[in-house]
Structures are given as C-alpha cells and as structure tokens.
Image 1 (tube, rainbow, N blue to C red):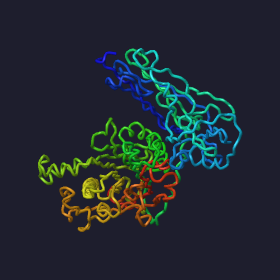
Image 2: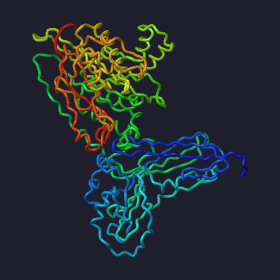
Image 3: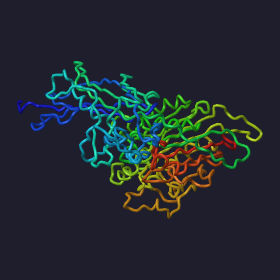
Image 4: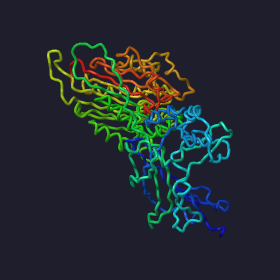
Length: 623
C-alpha cells in the first residue's frame, strides 16, 4: 500500500429509542468518514470499513421487522410477565437495573430461564433445585453487567458494509443474528447468568416464530400486535449518484411497551361561590419541558426513552385534553415541535392558537428554541387581538429612551447584557363565541377577557432581572388594558421562576415590594443595578393568585425534581371582574414518586405540574 495514499474509515451509526405503542419511533442514523494515518489502516469497529475515498453523498432506506414473542421474565411473581406498561419497565420499577439475565448453570432447574432484572433472578434462585445434566458446564468467568441496549451486537457484527462495493479494504457479509453471549459465575450453587439485553428468542410457548417484515418507511408507529416483542431495523446507505450500496447495519430494539395508562384524574376543589356572575371557562397553565432541556444529564433518574419527545408528547397532549380546558397557556414549547406536533394535535382537539418563540438563536438546528404557546377552544372563544412582548426589546428601550444611554457605551452594554435574556410574553384578547345577554343582575355583561402567558428568566441568582421583567410586563399590560376600557378582565399565567417568598410574587400580589426585600438589594457583585427606585416598582392592577384564593395557600410545589421542589408557576386574575370557582390541587408526593424518584417520569412527562382552574366573569361596566 502506498503510504502517501489517503485512506478513510467509514462509519455507520444507527440507534433507535425504546418503542412504545402509539409513539413514533424514528431511526437516528448517519454515516461519516474519518481520514486515517499510517497507523490506522485497518478498521477497528464492526460497523466500519476502510476505503480509499470519503463517503459520497448518500441516502438511507429502511426495513422494519417484528420479532417473535418472548417470555420477559421466568420469575412467576414478576409483574412484567403480564404487563408491558411503561410504568413497570422503567429503571425505577426495575430497581435501577436495565439488565436482562439468563441462568446458564446446567445443573439448575432454572437453566436457560431468563429474568428481567437481578432482583427477579435472586428471588427465583431461592426456588431452584439441582438436576442431572449431560450438558458440560459453561466455563467460569467474571460476571459482566451491561445496561440493556437498543440493538443486538450479534446483528451489528454481521451488518457492516456492502459486499459488492469494491471500495472497501475491509467488508463483511450480513448473516442472521447469533446466540446470546453467555457469562458465568464460579461455584456449583452459584447462579450463572448471561446478559440477554441484546439477545432474542425464536420460540415461545413451544411454537417457533419468525421475524416478519412490517414496514419499509423511515418512521414506524408500534401498535398492539407489536407489544411484548422486539423490533428489528435494517438501514442501508446508498450512493445518491450511482445507487450503489455503501454500508448497511441492523439493530434490534428493546421489547415494545404498551400505551401509557391514561393520566390520573385531577379533582377540583370548589371555592365558596357568590351570587350573580357571567360566563365561565376553564384555564390551565403548563410548562411542558422542551426537548432541548430534557437531557439525561439534567434528569439522570429518568429513563432515556421516557425523556424522548415522541413518548412525552403523547402523554402531555392526553393530559391537557383530558381536563377539558377552554384556554391553555403553555411554556417551553419548542418551535419545531409546535409546527410538527402540538398545533396539529390541539387543532384536532378543537383549539386554535398562537406561538411566540424566545428571541435567541436556535440551539443547533432550526427550530431548536423554546417559547410560549396559547390556545383557546374554538367553540368557546374568538380571537380579537394578539400581541407578543419581547423583553429584549423592552431592555433596549429602557437603556436608550428611559436612561438615555448609548447601548454601545460600557454602562449601556453592561445593562443590556444583564437584561437581554430572550424571554417573551404573549397577550391575547378573546371574545365569547356565545355572548352573555343583559339581565336584571348583569345589565352590561362583559364578553371579553385578556390573557397573558409568559416564562420569566430561570437563573436563581438573578432575582432582580425577574423582578424587572415582571414590572415591565405589568406596565405593558396597564397600557394595553387601559386603552381598551377600564373593565377588561385580565389573567396572567405562566412559569415565573419565582417562589412565593420572592419580590416577583410580592409585586404581583401586593402591587409593591418591601424596600428591605433581598431581591431588590442584590449588591454590586450581581452586576449593574437595573431596577428603578423602590417606590417606582408598583402597578395599578388588582391581582390575586387563583390557588391562594381557592385553597387558602399556594401549593407545596409546581416543579418537582431531585434538585428543586417548590412553586414557580401561577395563575393570576383581576379581582374586580373575575372570580375563581375551583382549582385542582397538586398530586401528593406519594403519587408523584410512584413511578419515579422525581419528575419527569413515565407517568408525568414534564418536570412541572399543570395548574387548572374554573373561572367566572363577574360585574359589569365598560366592555
């Protein structure tokens, strides 16, 4: 081989998330090349090959197969023998283990029995007995534990490159999957185990079954017939120019899980009602956790597959629709998911909506930025007006117009840098589709309501920035509402990233902030002062918190993670023309931790909890 001749290592990466009934499963596939030096002229991986050119432009084709039924666990007391609910197959339910095990001791009555985790294996081992066998014992070795993967190594080892390409110095033929890798433990009475997380069985109940092709599309949606079986995906990369097969790879999924059970009903606590009043409507606010933030690093206690958007989306939409809202305020709605998933699902459920993404650039690919979405039921409301507020724009106005600073000066740039956090708010005026008529008790009924939806800055070390955002949001709302009459009902919903002890809460509930509050005395180490004089931090709205009004106190938490448990989300209303009729208390901690150590979990697909309230328009006056 000429040492000056360039060589490339081609790699084909293929991964699929755990399949769940009704949830899209999409391949994560890409092919890339790496230039080799003289010491790397052979392929070091089963799923790579060495070629003389870098990979050409290529496209993928896919084939999906359904596998045979398998017995998931031989321990008779295991709930996973009969249930494929995601709740039963989470790492929380499995005791933190994702390993499937097989007994390989030929002298045990459990020989070749498989178990879903180590706990079931240990329990079953207590019932085993010694049997005579002519099968030689597997050779002893140190046990190896591996987390259950999404594909089979045996398939991978045989699905490398095209045997006909002629490009490769190293190529492999594809062969059917091999048998599970066996690992044993010493001792005549010691359980012998084998990692079956990457194996499969072709016999169930005494009947042999084959792999059946079920689709050749890129995306596949598992259905009831797939539950309890593995799927196999074959991906082939072809040259766009010549159509030549470049590489191909096969992976197997974990067992397909059944559809997640319906969310538990949220009971409403009714407030003491007064006589009179007008139209009623149900409003919810919910931070749904954008995919860009739903990482294993942030939530290590949550299964990777239950953090995937395709899984969480189904749960979130069902949870929202199940409570029958008329107005829905959402935060952390990813821009691409609003277009591809959320708007269509909500429209199909009878809603219309508007979206406003944060003002920062996308995190990587287009659409990877979150924002706020606001929906209303089409049969209940018509949209009259819709506006959005960008706090970056308000910061620019503050520096240049109010403070008279050059934004490029040191002081101006410092203030702008501190205040420009890309947060936004939405503002809509909705009119009742079936308007209230005048009556003896309500001579001039109100038929419109103003809804604001926002998500404030999240950094706990910047309470002054959150207070500045809240003050300017209230000032914008003052201008907006006053221009449309003095009696337009107002609701402000969202994730305020502020606890009830914060200055943000004080400003919203008391119309002012105490001069000694620590949030307004942050010190020079927190950057330039961005707040006006304490006496100027005020507003004219008469607001109250729905949950405090109905339940007598704020919830213990609306955000429940391992790092933080507390209240960050609120529904505020104008007290002179709106009355809360009910509110749904947060689930008890015992319920939240039933299927996970914290949120998100297989049951709750966000780290926040949805707030729900029934409201009534009261009073009369200017419309």
